[in-house]
Image (tube, rainbow, N blue to C red):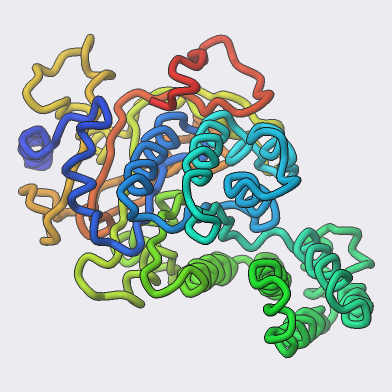
Length: 453
């Protein structure tokens, strides 16, 4: 009976899926998301070319249609702010996108230091040059990891506007000095003794905010950047303390911080602002419709939906793949490498979509890997696809990956049409074109750079 149910679901998916071969095939998705103020675009891995390329295609269309005020990504604020300066054509912002992106030095560098992002950044800079400075589309990082870089940015800013407060901030941040820019060493120390640097990070943030009216008169954006870095210092301190305790708390600290940053960006860009967000499916897809909820975990997609329940304001778009290669590492901090993914687990979402093939085409072993498809859900429990209201395994690959163990892990039980508003399935994918990545013999070379598609 189970097998029969899956066969019926394959037929239903084949009937509902729309072909996804070129930009023109995005029309149903663009129609679904065109009124949204928050468009969150996911990815099933952190190292797949096609996920970046399709997200770039969607983002460009939204920008061209004046439905995007800024791009926010799962990256560090200080690094991404350098990209923001470059795409807005600020003075002394760099000679090329590649030069700026190669300055990303916190592991995993490949997530943003790659040719796919370089192509998007160059396109965005040219687009922005046609606009007035206050209308230019920004590029920002939402993440919380950049503790030391953010503290340095706060002090550097204060030295230009208030040297006395800069000295006070430097003294406060010296609380972290014994740990040699090792966040885990700091976190372990807070377990051993009941002390932390939380009060110091909060004090600097309060002092900065107390003088906001004066600082903003000189340069509103420079102040905003400094304030965000002070918020990151506070959030990172909390994150690293929570991380060492294990459990779901560190995840929740991080996703709440990313949500807070996204909302701050919306406020900064005004009442009519629209955001496009690039993050992993595990941050984008509503956690309430996965096993994350049972573990007490929340995520950005859930929090944004809860904060903005009005119909159509938030749209969540997931991505998936059945087979191919991916950039990842075997251990945290290890060198990146191109790895081959095994075929998706039997009866997972990706396996069923692979078996369904593209609409209107016969299923065959010779054509299947070319059959990419788009699902747009109608808001009901099954999304308008009979049988899709049951939980399915849904592939999720992070920066640390062990392909040989993938079928025993790397899957999130998911109510797909409730977790997402739409889903892009790319049957066969290739590794991201990261700068200086060592290519393995079975990795396909880049085929479409710099066009992106």
